Amino acid sequence: MRRAPATPENDLDADEEPPARTSADADHIAELERALTRIAHMLTRARRHDRTAAEAGVDVDRANVPLLRVLAEAGEPLRLGEIAARLDVEAPHITRQVQRLERSGFVTRVPDPCDRRAQRVRLTTAGADAVDAMRAVGRRVIRDCLDDWNSDDLAALARLNHRMVDDFLRHADDPPPAAR
Image 1 (tube, rainbow, N blue to C red):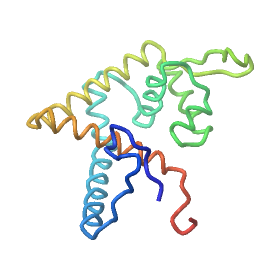
Image 2 (cartoon, rainbow, N blue to C red):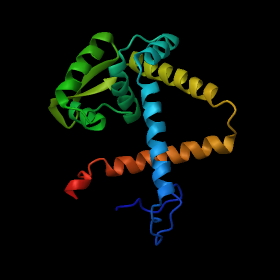
Image 3 (cartoon, one colour):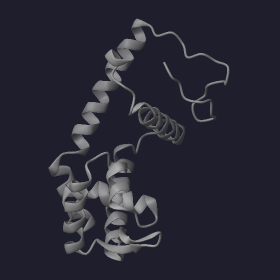
């Protein structure tokens, strides 16, 4: 089993081996999987998106939000293939989404400075404003839902979630257990 390199964020000493798993760990893993499934279900419902988009004053399809967020987080124009890789989808899917977002005025294509035959996709001002508005609503919802959590608990939750996501990403391309 691979493990994350020791960092202040993951609380492992460089020479420390991960602890042996117990039946209690298996129960915790089962509960974690259950909680993550519930969160994913809540966050990906069309009704949640529609409510968030309406509150943000943004008319954007739910499927296009991750693409807009990738561009916003990149901070620079990206090639279609890079967007597809970051979203872990096929390039033709991204091509169709970009075309829809161009028609909506949220993105535009610009020449690739490294290869004039290629193009990159960048957020327009309207696209950046849409992402900012959606993020603001999402953060308000999180703040309201976790209003009775203290600052230490919020910090721990954020730290552990980042650690978990980093570990999931590190293992994303691992072969299935039977193939190892």
